[in-house]
Amino acid sequence: MGRTRQLHDLGQSLWLDNITREIVDNGTLRRYIDEFSVTGLTSNPTIFDQAIGGTAAYDADIREKSAAGITGEALFVELALDDLRRAADLLRPIFDATNGSDGWVSMEISPLLAADTAGSVAAAARIFRQAGRPNLYVKIPGTPAGIPAIEQSIFAGVPINVTLLFSREQYLAAAQAYLRGIERRIGAGLDPRVSSVASLFVSRWDKAVGTSAPAELRNRLGIAVAARTYRAYRELLTSARWRKLAASGARPQRLLWASTGTKDPAAPDTLYIEALAAPDTIATIPEKTLRAFAAHGRLEGTLREDGGDAEDVLARFAAAAIDVDRLAAQLQREGAQAFVKSWAELLRRIAAKENMHDERAIQSR
Image (cartoon, rainbow, N blue to C red; front, side, top):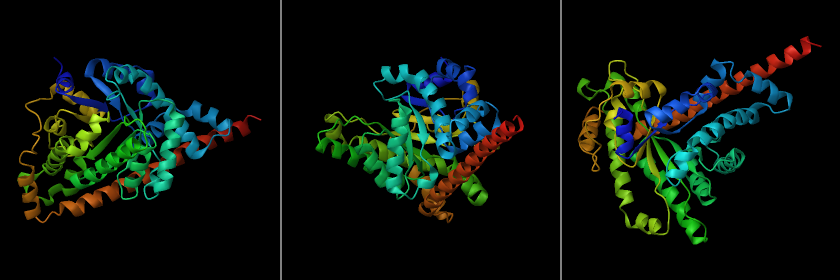
């Protein structure tokens, strides 16, 4: 049995943390689905910035859409959704076979809306409607302004991938928003079956700490935070509040591990995938890490529902003067800022390709 199949069979979904037109066109995504048990994928502004800026695969489409008067952000959304619709269609049999619990793709709202609740709600509804696929999540960050937007969007029936979560507390805020949205739907006589996932970022913790922690704690903070969060996730799924919603037909908001590529070249390249193997979760995984795990990954156990030694490890970080709560807020802010930077660069690249088309058109007259 393949190593990635072992993760699938223990109840963890593997979602590719990448989307480019090329991997859809050349059959790579199809091969990952067939050979590596990939059952979904995610995207973000950084991924699309690299895809559109780093290849010529989008140039003809940019010229065509630009000539039709579609520019700027609207042009990017069209380009991204063209890719994601095709990926969603490839994954649709999985979505149907799992009754909608798997087989998803994700599209981010503009990161410029991170502090705009009303704008986030409107953008999420617009993207989901424009995509025209039932298996497309809209990503909303779990920032203070994003939390009410998540609740409103769930109430409106829009599937949401809550992104940029870095701690148990941030996860619980997102989970509570999801529960409130479902409770409001039930109260209004609406179908409670609105799907959501909550994405906890892992490896960025260890990159942020670097060598400031004792050597014996190196690359252990992200996993400890994830294990603490997993315990909260399991406890929520056994709570009376959740059981009541489940009895009405609601679906659990699944916990998703994001940022699972190893940042430290001295650490194993499959570190986070091996440590965070856990039933009823999703692991998003970069292509390089996916291939590495398929080649030499080892599955030696699963994450404990009680969090294992997470609290002991976190106490040791606290003793080393590392404030986890402060760092979680900092990482969320920095993550949002990084997406804004990628977004600006992405729109700049698209504009440059549009201008190149306009200049060639003028020269040909």
